[in-house]
Amino acid sequence: MPVRNMGAAWMPGDGSLSQFIEEHEYSPRRALRKQREKEESNTWRTTQWGNYNKSLYIGLDPGKKSDYSALIFLEPFLPIDPEQHQGKFVYHLSRIQRLPLETPYPKIARLLRKAYNQAKANPDWDFIYIAIDEGGVGTAVADQIVELIPNADITRVTLTGGLRPKWNDARNVSLPKPQLASTLIALFESRRIWVAHEDKKQLEELKEELETYQMKINTQGHDLYGALKTGAHDDLASAIGIAAWLAEDSNGGSVPLFW
Image 1 (cartoon, rainbow, N blue to C red):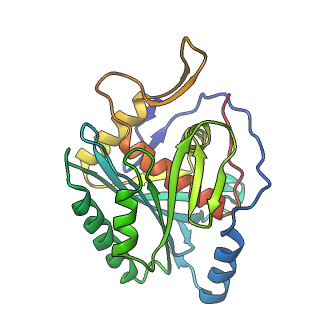
Image 2: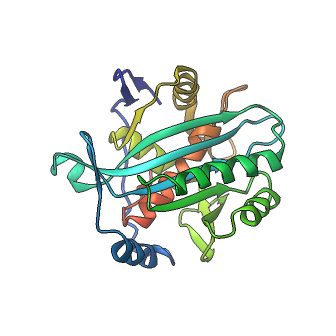
């Protein structure tokens, strides 16, 4: 996935071919979320970039022993120009954090609790949604997090095969890897993820991941997604992907599928 240097903000360039499949099914909680936001918040946060709807999507990809853990923040906003992006949300990637290898899972859970409590105290955000990739490390880490912040709106994501997501209950979704990859690539290619970050090290790590992120078919005919080069990582990309998918699903966006 090539990256174009945009100065303070950057994102991958154009060039991907895609076919979009419209998804008309609503997730179990989308209508409830939108009604709650409508009833509880009548104000948006206006900046020079656009109008933020005061929602925050947190993505967490807990790593295994040889993988990093990643924590990211996405903030939806509508650009000042109403014709830009056809009225769709742009997502401000406002936090990028990769944790050291072998960070204990209880420490990861406490870090997320701290980030959540800080976000709750921030007047910029009225609604906070958390997406956790629990497939790679099992349910134990997600269980710890739910126990630490029981009142948080947490979606537990398990990456699977297939094409269509399946909500197992209101807080658990089986998300096909093609949906994750397509959401991630489509948002970057359409410039709907906006990155403005001062930590150059974290930016370089993200750029490196996006440049090595791939979708390919192996010799057995199976599709593969992620960092397929030896020694490469995709933890930040995965954390962004699950948070972005949840945001698009919650905001009524159509999730594309790349062929």
